[in-house]
Image (cartoon, rainbow, N blue to C red; front, top):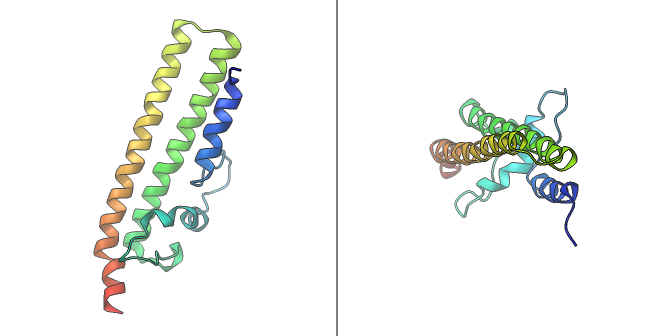
Length: 137
């Protein structure tokens, strides 16, 4: 049995939700709530306790917002891919639609890479701020 386009998209959505994906809305981002879902990515043997968003000083807090903004951008680009993917299956495959989907998918994949780079940046900020505070205690 072939999976339907929506079934394939739903599988990707379920995977992304594990890492805090939420469909776009008009509300301002809940930085503290989103950070609660993502902060586990920064736990290490030396940093077993990753601070809550409100506990961070301005430097790591801004790094966390950049990290989360990159995540939000990837989420929005993923949604663009969903729309174009459905269009391919509902309206038929042609060169224009395939090329449009390819552009959108490439942009999404680049955003995921940027999210990874932001993670590396925030890890570096933590080694200069959060880790130093924990060592002093």
